[in-house]
Length: 366
Image 1 (cartoon, rainbow, N blue to C red):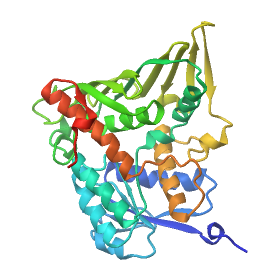
Image 2 (cartoon, helix red, strand yellow):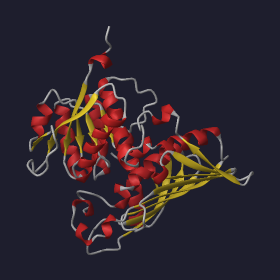
Image 3 (tube, rainbow, N blue to C red):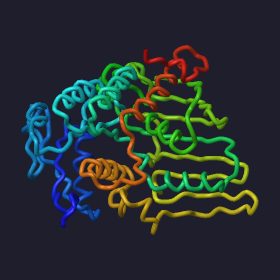
Image 4 (cartoon, rainbow, N blue to C red):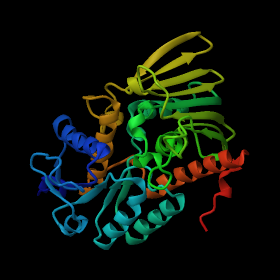
């Protein structure tokens, strides 16, 4: 007798918003079918875009109508890739049609709307996930394993950084990401990833002390650089820094954790391994995820670098959830978890505005 997984040949989805990140999701889904041994085809069948004739993907129908997509019973989920301030309205419409939702980060440009969205999908019983893709990077899983093993002893401190350079380009002036209403600054755009993986690897953040600034004041009204001291509930403390205007030959995310027995270091440019320094032996060794099927089950063979591979993993894991495949040890962030991380970001912005330390509990929804 065939199982449901064996009967199912396709998981169909639609992308809402065909800008840069929408194209990334489309490519990532294509890569998933090519590089992973999936028990289904992950098919992009429709896109919702303001310019249906502006871009063509073979086998995909472009439309301006969100309702057309939501009414289509052959579409298993929608993938929201629009500006942040539009996510809420799209999710509320999806709920009316009982359509599962995969949403780009952050959940909303407003923390308070993010909480409302999380509550709404939970109450409606709608399957949901947010593209906090660093959860799928193999080096993050390796870090969690080593911390659980006590490899570097008691954690003393950590440093995590994510630098981009794209907004050095003067043509980025007045785009949606430079507006506090539709986008949010470097801290919300990039820092949401870092807050999420800090809480996934080290523990919940209790209080923050943050400083944000704008260098190109004629281009934007949101932070271009943010530096935050973070204090975790378990006593660990560390530092987070993000920028959209720091230029370097490589745009990488780095995460270093310092302990009483040594340190662990990861870089997004070596996403399948970590570097461990043993203080007592005064030696460094590399630990790789290669051959670790459990860690690589969503990530698969790297084809285009961690960015596409991580998006691929996020989409595949959500498709697995939709198809009912066993997702033991599921690491996808749902709306509730994404709103939890956004609460920390809200506290960071409050800290920067008021030039003081802020406890996360100060950020009240009601």
